[in-house]
Image (cartoon, rainbow, N blue to C red; front, side):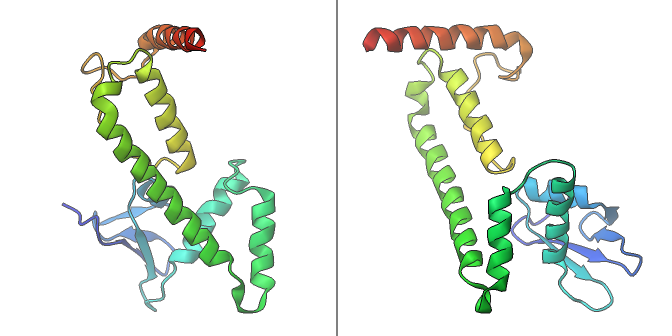
Length: 185
């Protein structure tokens, strides 16, 4: 079993191939991006020199996603990053970005914790499943797929909550909830 507390060590050979030391196989940049989306930290080192290449490869992953039309960062943020490199001493951008992501992770964790605390009561509320699915999709989009799942039991065990056959039920629940909310106004 892999120790997920320690970074996953990836070694780069002279041939530029990347080797996963946990599974003893070669990996691609897309595989590494998948590990990161799953919540794993990675460390990429050059086998011969021992140099840490992690930053270089993470930037390459972002650049490849951008080149495929997947806008990872807005242009104004990219401009600000470039400007921050022009400021002597690097400016405050790296610390600001780190603090922003730390706050996002902390807020997500608190929200999930709060929802789990009130989940038993809210699970009985009509439309809760639809709201929960929307919130999970939002958090997944905001965190690049690294969102935690709420522990609410699904109405029908063994079925995915977003399965096509449940769509009509979700729409009905949402309409009922909207109707009840409009009556309260």
